[in-house]
Image: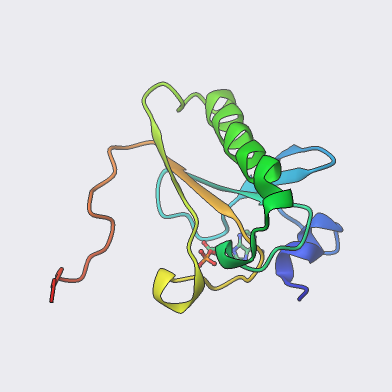
Length: 120
Ligand code: AMP
């Protein structure tokens, strides 16, 4: 399934690109949720975390290394950052091409949701 992120990869629509190589792309989130908020995506189309296969293990690990590298380039790695990959409806996923959110630039609250936690 092709999404808006494939159009960004193919440069059909613009993005504020922070890093690119043959396997991944990192770009600023258009609707930032922290002072620093960028996404790391694989160029391979993988819809959700549920669709990651064994052959993608190295690619998904590499996405984390690129997240740390770009965070370092932006000067926020040492103070720290949060990586998030939302999956499907309950995870809040809206774009069905896996992406690592990288949030940084201030202390981030935990737990990350704002609704009341009910354990039943
Ligand atoms: P998720 O809700 O986890 O699927 O995250 C999708 C993210 O993609 C959201 O944070 C959006 O703000 C972001 N997004 C959607 N379209 C674009 C775009 N054209 N450029 C940059 N970020 C985008």
